[in-house]
Length: 441
Image: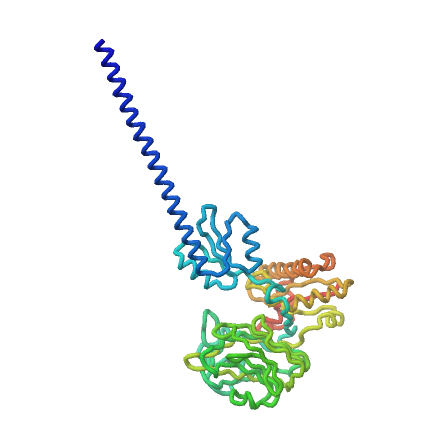
């Protein structure tokens, strides 16, 4: 009897202990679950605050989960900033093609480890490049990038006319710097300017002083003090506007190039002239009053503390009317199809030339052409040939996809440096050799 009671007691003790342990385990499990839920809730709150913080910093932003490409594509198509999260709601990327600096600031303010995507690359014929119609001349008359010349000196391929100018390094490139209110140089061309010609260069104009401007003149005696008294037309980039100056003006208010490096492109066809600052047309002049000499004069204003810079100056003869030249000569060289360095990616500045080619092929449906890529002789010959072939194929693909040209009408081939049209010993010669040619079949 005692043994049975003892056994019951032991069993009750064991059961009690098991029950206590079981109850403790259940309590622990509940506490663990509660803690995990609290961690998750707090994480969700942190994630929510991070998203909200970014949304507070960026107007019209759209939140998309990374696994929802349709949401991302629709937002980007509408031009909205996109905050991309993972499935847990954590911010992984912020995209803002218009104001990348704003996106970076928003991410920093939120205190999250997210990637700020670079602006989506522009493509020929898209967005602000839709109506861009600049077509550069097909034969280089003068070209210089100032590379290889002594820093601190005036470049020997230009003619010094006065002022304070010197070559300077900036962001890994060489520029001609003007730190004087009136600096002038002459560009020798070796021949009289033809009916059609183009001018291209890059410029940096500080926005802090009225003397920061660039003028391009076509006769002697030009100076910054005679801008308003110059007899004839000239091109100008000022602090507040840019375009054609003279007795008859064609100017546009533009400030996009102030305090940043901008692409300047000018096309002259007889008495007609157009001018672009980046993708914006700033002049459309049908009655240009221009003398044609074998030189042009640049007048550059700047200050010691706020200098003006220019580089990559290129002057070319010719321009549009590809079809006439193709019919007359059987082939035509184009200098207006630009690629990223060492790549076959076509840059948006190519819009004008590609549009001209596409329109020509649409208007003349019996025309078949071969697209030839050419390079200079800098670098490995086989690599140049392969790159030129990829670039020719990129042009062909673009004409088929964007202009509806039948692929059977086109061929693409890369010639590399095997067919130079100029001496590779000069910058102008190398630029003439870096080209895309169209050959009538």
